[in-house]
Length: 313
Image 1 (tube, rainbow, N blue to C red):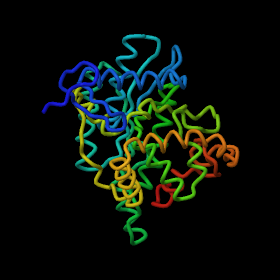
Image 2: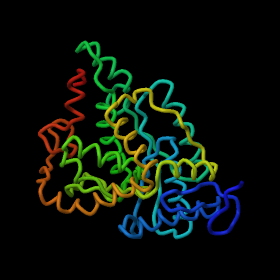
Image 3: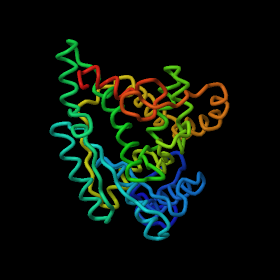
């Protein structure tokens, strides 16, 4: 028996258990687009004449985000749009995904920019991990280096592109996992920064981040990107080893299967209590890194500490 769309009766492409509704391709894409535009409008993410830089990776989420923002720009025409990719230098992985990112930008006619670990820090991520192991006798989680340097370059790159907003393709699953992980770790400082427009101390060197896909489950970002026939890679980073985050993801997915809508509940409940949490946590004072001049809460930023650790002076 063919599942029929709850709105028009045509063959459905998805059944949302948490809503009890099935949707055809047309109504599914329209609904995803509506939710993203509603999020942007509700939280004032994009203002008239804003320059918006989208952090892209060649994956499904950033591909969908760039496509939806490009469609919105062509329809409304009141903001500028550019794409920024960070090349970590992961052999056999980033070169492949980068091809999809470039192809998408060419197809959508969006300016493409690229910052690399090699040019910015003198070493690729592969080289950093190798040096860590040679120098200290063990291999640190590559995510320690990658996360720090990616955030550093995304902010610096967006700022140098004169961006008003940096759009990040975090979906509902990403947010639910981050919320639960921070709660289990007892990391209130990170928790209070989560949000549609992540909370941060205002500083001229920080570019405001926005998350237009925050209401869209990962399963739906994948399906939407496929139905829109966007070029993207499903390859997984070879350094993905964070067992804790993986366990949190598995727990949430198990609960979602048993209790549909739990991901939305996690995020919505957190959003309601977050203002109270922010009143309890004192945000760090922002200063300038003594080595590179980028904003940091410490005398020396995390990026420079890591570079010094592996001997990059």
